[in-house]
Image 1 (cartoon, rainbow, N blue to C red):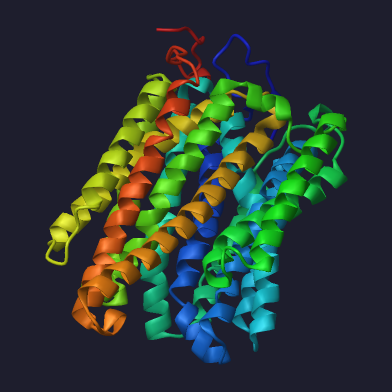
Image 2: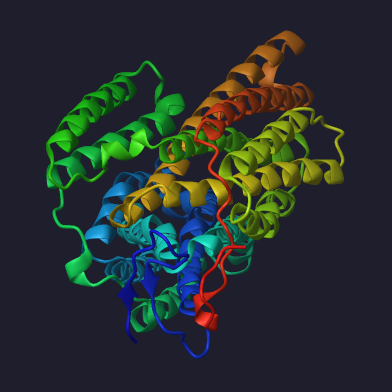
Length: 506
């Protein structure tokens, strides 16, 4: 199978052109492979979280210890994301995908036979390395293989796959743990990993080695990893360890110092991990900043709604997972539509509409009470998910279109990092608001405090409502950078070159 690169400066051509596979245009083959990797990666966190209580009992450890099964994956994958994106630019995204799938699959097998918590954590580190290779390069592969007039569609399907992974995790994990045991949540993913590895090796193509950039900035990579993982650890554990504790303060201080060191290194590096000049492009920087604020707002829904549904309303974990699925299902349904619109409508318009819907949905969600019907809860979650879908596809497309071909991996990984940072900060803030508001409400409402079940339920609802109001305010902060990214016209629609037509604008 031949592959070639083209100059896309004047024609609606993909950067990487290849012949069809069994009559299927290559771009859709690449999209299917990317979506499989994205699905497995996004499925991981949600499917693991549902099993944490079981793992604590299995290994006879505290909840504070077992949380590291999830946290270690987040820290490693976040710290390595931008580095893996740059490695994809330098050494080929196919190589990163093959190694990533192989590591993720092998580590799933090691996790399934783990006999202790340390063994499971070691497997999770390897899984995180593999997942970071795959997740960091997905958007870059789609951008390189889809023509500009269809790029939004391809990225929209990718975003929909994220929703599918998030939606499937809690339900699948709950069923596997209840019917089989916790090891099944690792065994079940091995066949998909094996199939993915074979598909990547057989069909995924890459840019020729002589047309890739050169030079890996090792000092910058190390500083970036330590900075991001340290900052995310501090944010995640701040409430548990105490925001003024020596550990948390030390982590934040170290992250600040490393950020300064990282900028200093990158300004002097011939091949920086992150080209700081990208942030002078409003389409890129505005998209990253607005994504962080949006994910900050969404994280309140993700972290707080299970508490509301299980502890305040009395639903089972499986029932709560089914109700919560309204959010990712909305993303699954709306993201492809949003992607199609992103190919025809300018990014500032679509992303602003999406953010307005997200903000409105969060405000609507803040009106939840202990009597709200299931339909009312589902409608609120669906609205928030719809807004996120409307925003994500055009925002991703605008970011990827703003960077040169040799920085697609960096841009792709930047979005994954933005999502992790936004979620980490949002979860920490939402949790702190919930805890403080519950304590304040119960101290005023009952002499028994949180030991009074009725008072505790009302206090929890009050805390959830307040946290969602704050989340809405933060999500609204994403609107100015989304608008100020520029008002470039919609990408003209071209005829498909593979159909034998000459590309001409409408």
